[in-house]
Length: 61
Picture 1: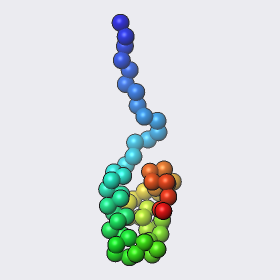
Picture 2 (picture 1 turned 30 degrees about the vertical axis):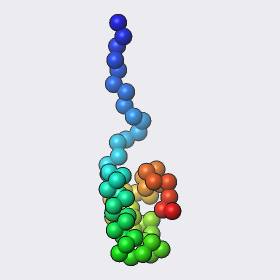
Picture 3 (picture 1 turned 120 degrees about the vertical axis):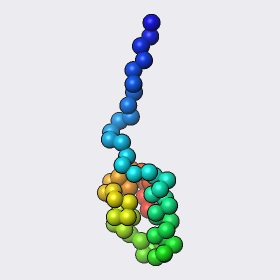
Picture 4 (picture 1 turned 180 degrees about the vertical axis):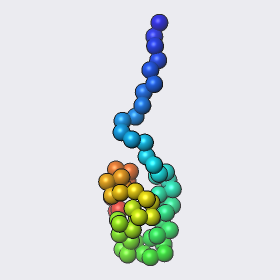
């Protein structure tokens, strides 16, 4: 008889919704312009740190 194990993903679960993060970034880009929004602005608005931003999206570009 085979046993089933719960397989959990590695690392900590994300504390934010990546789709919601896209919506927040789009609002900032629309309000201020893409070039005027920094990575710090994005991480502040999302409540995450820069490594989490890069892990979820790769880069601002």
